[in-house]
Length: 146
Image 1 (cartoon, helix red, strand yellow):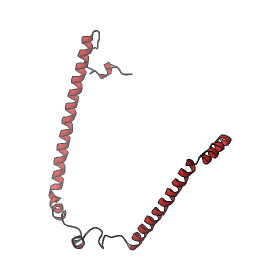
Image 2 (cartoon, rainbow, N blue to C red):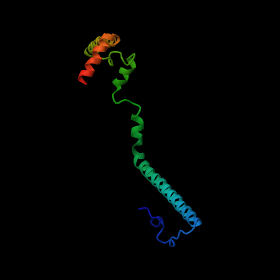
Image 3 (spheres, rainbow, N blue to C red):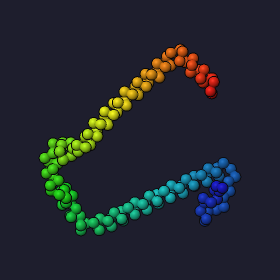
Image 4 (tube, rainbow, N blue to C red):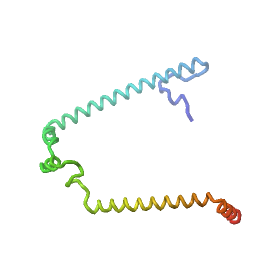
């Protein structure tokens, strides 16, 4: 259960909320305590961030020159040549293998075949429901079995 007394400082005077002014004063005091705690928390976080960022900077400063020289240079110089001589990402070193290209063609053909079958099935179902005699049979079937 929420009790306002639990939110008060231990050194605060006993809580007596008798009038509306007492309640408003207590709410203002709670807001002031909240704001001060937020400020303290923000300053602590800022202080910790500054402390640790300075510490990390001092740790990595001696070795930062190692990374600055090799960062823009590839690990293998042949890789630069491969990218430089390649016209696009689908030219020989980066293109798909013949097996993958063949699989893609087979998949495309199978997809077209399945699309044709789905279209013919849709046409058959549509034609079935357009005929009155078929609808009468369908209704009779539903009445008998459902």
